Image (cartoon, rainbow, N blue to C red; front, side, top):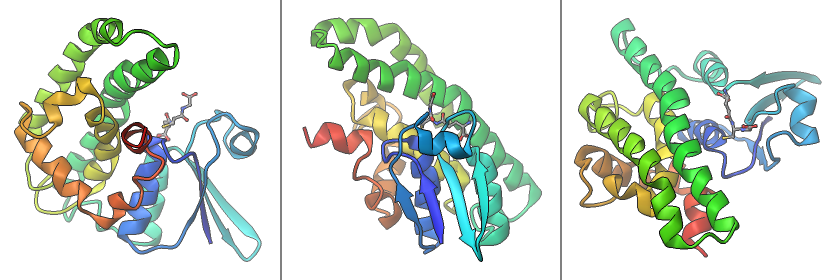
Length: 219
Ligand SMILES: N[C@@H](CCC(=O)N[C@@H](CS)C(=O)NCC(=O)O)C(=O)O
């Protein structure tokens, strides 16, 4: 049995569980928060997700999403990793960009910042004003990604880790006013169309519940 430890609104946890759903692998998601005792039991950094495979009394414990992805490739299927070295390194490039600059600019710069500001009951006009400069950077990055985007999926014809790492971050962003650039009719047309394509996949439909987008849209 596989356990994925991490609250449902964690983008990295969503990457892992969506990949398992794409591969029809059973798992149980335990919705613990980052830095909670259960997470710290396994990951001294307190980050989520943690992946635990329980087999014959021996647990395989992994953390760091790109390491979990490697394990899924080698134990279950390489279908998200690309058919040749050129594609494989392209996918790796997207994993790295999503996990660093995109996550920093969008999840930290906009998504978490807006959630914190709303929680503090800041007036909407003030929030928009405070987020204007960070959102210029987020939009700049989105347009860079738009230029690199192959289509119909991020690196071409097939869904890969590039899609699985990027989509959860952008799905949260899209649910906010700052994410207009990737909403229908937004300037990043290829990404906006891809978002809608991704939203139709069962793996993402079934991991929507509890995501930031769900929590906002169901308010
Ligand atoms: N490098 C980690 C990053 C995971 C990560 O940032 N997870 C977030 C939730 S989406 C987290 O645990 N944040 C806790 C914190 O920033 O203290 C990975 O690839 O798994």
